[in-house]
Structure formats: structure tokens, C-alpha cells
Length: 408
Ligand code: ZN
Ligand code: ZN
Image (tube, rainbow, N blue to C red):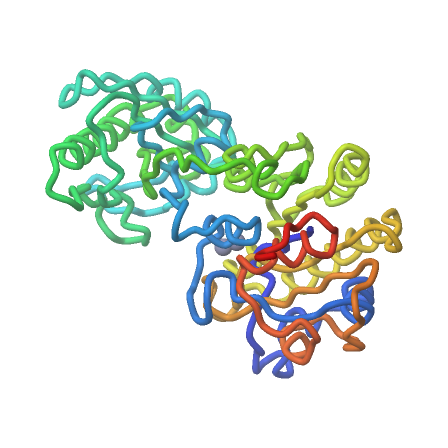
């Protein structure tokens, strides 16, 4: 099961009214579409614009309406932290603020070095407002990090201090429900953010960044509070041994929460320059011990958020090459290959949209769509019709002979 993050798009007028997938030369995905099932997936439901967290949960068969407990928790699990019941996790950015606490750069110049040195100032921070709380802070990839509050009487119902836009002031977190727990968590969060600025603004790492003309990482902005999602394991839910290849912390977190084995691929970065060859090798190596291998490839979403049509096309072509290598190794007379996306991220919007994404699946006994191109418009003429993200796993388990009968 191959998921291309942010795969779907809309036709772009300046590009001959084509989508990136239509413009891209993708012989392998086209072959899969023509010989197999082809359709469209609404990740959640038609028109609903999903985050990658809920979209990937749905593709793996977990109903986000039932199980989703906030992104922060999945990020923390993906970063290798443990979450106990009642503990609250946030995803964070190192960011740059000016003297009036206005956000100048939400990603601190995409800082990618010395964040562990900065983090030493923040990890195990003592908070005066909530002295019973333990603070755990861990940097992940580039400007990203996770924050966990451990202790009792906490709630994830608090607003984000991160204003999520440049030029706006850091926001005071507020309780989103009238409980002591939410009030306490908001208070702790505000103190953490304030103290992060005090501890980081004169830090040696930042002095050096300023000297080099780089944006200082002088504050931490948390968002997306979450609690441990308590998901039933993939093994018990589907009776399948699954493994996952990804460079993205969030996807690792979803897999850890579901007991899907995360394979370590050092060169997988989750960016546009990820080493697809290393990921493909890891996928092929894991066939023997897995019933299902989940390969998540992030690059197309990154290009989409950058609004970069050409780079999305180029990345989709690279991904197609990687998919071709996997198709070469898989005996399609005995195994299935599925390609889809977790949601659409149109390059002209630079954000996720509620559009459906194409899905194609090949393998034994799969009827052929005879549609020769893997793209949004062609997929609407496919033989699989239009489904929801949650419908995917039942279709997969039915074909591979692992579903159980409903009724008698
Ligand atoms: Zn996504
Ligand atoms: Zn995205």
C-alpha cells in the first residue's frame, strides 16, 4: 500500500489546464490503473478537507471520528516518546519572534542544526505555575519538535499559542472548556512558551545564527494538543502483520499507535530530497515478514505547500519510478499493489483541499479498468467508483482473503 502524500490536485490554467498528475509521465502508475481497479477516494467524506493525521488513520482502517485524540500525541509517539493516559502532547516549531512577540518566521529559517543544544534548555523545565508537572521536550526533524506534559489534572482542550501566520503576535493559550484541567494546562503552556523565549533569545546557538544572518530560533510555538489515542492493534483488527516505511514523524506515530512495525530507513527524510531508492529497498526487504507493507512518501505534499507545480510533477515522476521498482519485485500473480494519496493539496491553494484522490490497485482476480492514465479525471471513470478512506481496508482484506463474513 503506497500512499503519496498530497497526491491530488486541481487543473492549473497556466499549465494547459492540467493537474500535476496529468502533466507527469507516470508509466508505472498508469499500468497499474489500466490493469486493475481504479477509482476515487474521499479521505474522510466528500468535501471534507483532512489533515494528514486523520486521513492516514482512515486509510489504515481507523475511524478518526472515533479514535482521533489530537495530532500532538501521534507526533510524540512518532518521535519515540511514550504517552500515558492523561498526559498531553503538542507538536512544536522552533520559530523567530521580534521584541514585541510578533512571529517573524514560523520555522526559524528552517533551522536544521543544533536544535538538540537548544532543547537542553527546555527539556525538564520547571514551571512555577504548575510545579507538579514534568516537562519533556524533544527536537525531531529540522525546526520541528514535540512537547509532553506529564502529571495529573490535564486536558487537551486548550487553544494553540502558535498564531500559524507570519506577522501575528504569539497567542495566549486559553481553556476551551470550563474545567480546572483545561485552565491548568493553558497556564502551563503559556509559561512554557514565555520561558522558552527567555531561555533561547540569548542562547549561543542563536548569537551565531544572527551573526551568519540567519533567523534565530528564539521561541517554541506548540500546537495540536493530543492524548494517547488507545487504538486497537492492526494485527487484532485485520489479522495482518504490517510494517511501514516512512520518513515522516506523524506516520511513524500512527504506526506505533497501531502496533505496525516501523522500519528504520536512515535516508528517508520526508522531504523532496528523500532517498526513494533506500525506501524501495526497505519495502522489498520486508516482503518476507509482512502481510502488508505501508509505504508513505511525503514529497508531493511538500511541493504542493510550496505552490511549486514543476517540482510536484518531478517528484511524482520520481515516485512513479520507485513504484515501478516495487512492481518489478512483486509477483502480481500472487500479491497486490495499491497506490493512492492521503488527500489533495492543490498547488494553487498551497493547502489541503476536500477533493477526492485517485486510487489504483492491481493483483490476482482484480478486474481491469482499461483506463490508461492514473490521474484525477481518469480515476472518476474507473471501475472502483468513489469511496471513503475507511472503505479501503475492507476492500483490501476481501481481495487478500482475510475478511470475515457479515451475517450468515
Ligand atoms: Zn498528508
Ligand atoms: Zn500537507
